[in-house]
Image (cartoon, rainbow, N blue to C red; front, side, top):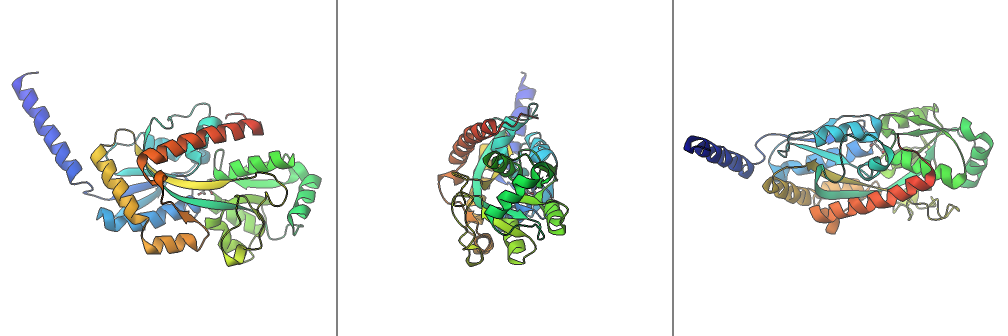
Length: 324
Ligand code: MLT
């Protein structure tokens, strides 16, 4: 390299370092790989709002849907790693590698891990007119109708899909699954009676259960929801499906290669956002828990996602589901 080239490289490196020091200088985009109005979208919009102050910039939410969240996730894996395009994703980050043969991205290698955001219990819900009023009656109705039962989900690898897989294997049932681009559009069809059943995170389910727009037959996580309106709803494990546990989490990710200084600023901003009292109040009102442990650190988050990948790989293999 001659002197001029060295001088140019040094100057460019200086500009790039300055740009990192000034990060963020423009709006940051949070990409959600599911439909607007669903659980992932709702948490992303709450976090976007709470990130505005610590980042000092606008934070925009964009939805890129399809294929159980893998299309949007691939888009972020390919984005310029400058901190301006981030991904809000859920357990699908850990399950897609076991469910898709030709995934165009690798987990964890293609991402930087910024921190875990929340844990969301989930519920088993049905159309309001379903001819069952308890889990035992539902079980009987499923046995009688088997493949005529329509089970909605947000695509292969989504939380609703995984919960549905586990439900079918626990009941020995073989329902007809109906994929949507997110559980927001699926919820509209469930309330209208076009589909029969769905597992849905408390984020989106509690309001509809309270408004009697859907029926509920159980909580899919290990504990009942800590909300007065849901206190009488048992867990599926209490109703006889031993060890049934689908608890959804959401995290924040950047493309691999995002500079460490930018990642440190984003993690600090996320920590500050998750202390925002409005965000905490909105999440708790829906039975969700904001994370405040080692999983909010990039290394702890990455370790947890790798553990979840192992755990779900075993569950998926036991369910007999073949990769797409
Ligand atoms: C899911 O089932 O994975 C979610 O509900 C996705 C979504 O946010 O729509």
